[in-house]
Length: 483
Ligand SMILES: [Zn+2]
Image (cartoon, rainbow, N blue to C red):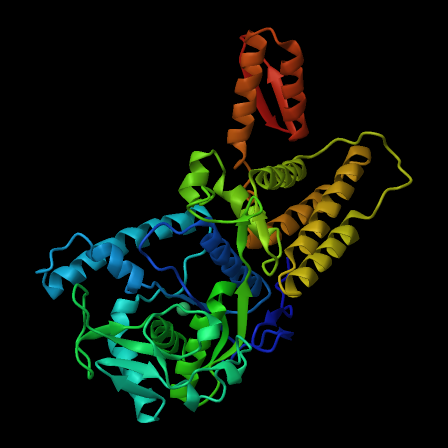
């Protein structure tokens, strides 16, 4: 398959319009992604965001764009401190407090990476931790202070939003409603209480602290991403992503800090993934519909079916997660995998000459064109996958009548590999589906032993549909090979 260089357009929250991705001067596309706050298991709503980021990254790479992908780990923050310090005595030293925080965040970082691997989400090129960047955060705050864009008060430092005419540009806030000059200490607040937000938090009893020019304290959440993003991706970043819940205040504040310090625009394109609902309701612990990947695993859900269910829906549409919907994803995957096995085989012509016969090679090329055009159009996966499924229907019908040639089968397989580079959900290696065949053979053997001939025949047909030829030997064993 020839290498591609395809344009990709994305919806930019900043301009509220579709814009082509423009690589930097060195040809790279730098992407900064707000990573997890590592104090607990991430839930499937968080995972939806990471799956969208993986989709974006893989699409850009497949489209011929070199990507530098940075995702941070937030390992110091209010909730982390609350959970990691609760069992420590009041007399605990700062070293002990840092140790307890590190133990908690390292544990959940490892579990988070396990989730990424289970979902075949590619590891970031760089994964900075906030606690490794305290000097960078202090330097950034000092820059803002020197420009009159930050002020210290009682050991804390706040960002002066009155000095930032662009403040509100991302969340499209009405500047009239802003209460510049009053300050807020918490990291999370609503858009109707726009205030000077905290950059550095003065030490409080029971919290781990770092030394700073303003006395002991710790960073606010927002400054963490600005400092890590500038350090690892530079002063010009092509794309910044996150969930829609981060638009305000987190991303708005990142713009304020970074652009305030740099004196020029920082991120060209802000791309946000929508929420996930569960069975029509907002996910919450009290409703009992709060799931982690481990919860799904216990219910027998294949993580790759979850991956496919999420990615086959458009990232900017609200996604209603349901177990019924997961079954649909599983069936869709089965169909693609069965088609793949069929193309691996040699096929045998059924009906002979057929007036509706189509030209397989141009038909594959047409599907390929439609697929990549849809992916380049704001990652329109529903349309891209529709092109793939229509092709499968057409070629299956063709193959039933007039067996496809080896060249045509190989072209179909190459297209499947190309699409799998994005979805990572159908096997690309011959023989990787052996487990499924073996399981079906075992089920058929059990049915025969129970003298359930109808069931045994049904399973035999199911195996045949996978393009597998089975041969029952006189000694009672069954051997199989691909047709
Ligand atoms: Zn962030």
